[in-house]
Image (cartoon, rainbow, N blue to C red; front, side):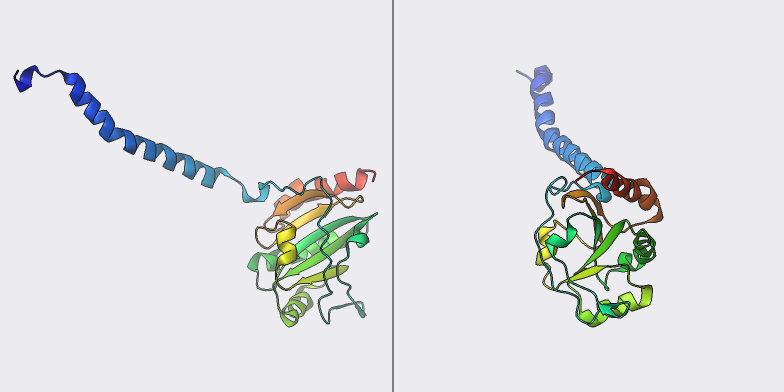
Length: 198
């Protein structure tokens, strides 16, 4: 039997076998790029939404004062009965610098408590940071080893949580507070938590 009389089917099968891994690779690469680029990191899900906030008492940030009095650390019982905004921050975090004026604005709303978790920071650097921008926090816990941040499910600083009067996590914002997400997401979530009955 001559080569010219060979059936085209085996040749096509060989081409398919050669091209199949390439097609699979390109499909997986496209899926990976889509998932990587399409996702908004501020909308990462949190397993804590609707659950009681983590019981992570933290000592106060050493030497931090507000109106001449020491700023207390964090105790879980301090959250009951009030709507709280918990912000995880650090002096070495560049986006944390950008969001501080907005945290100061939120602190003007006396219906909510703004609480800070200082993540893996040196006390003197954290105090200098607050001295530069002002202190929006009614309490600041020093999370020196980052263990409390892990319990809260923090991906990276800054992150912000809305805690309802019942002590449950109502909302999580991944990334810095911006003028846009403050109006579009954070304020509506705070209002929703304020309107809810414990």
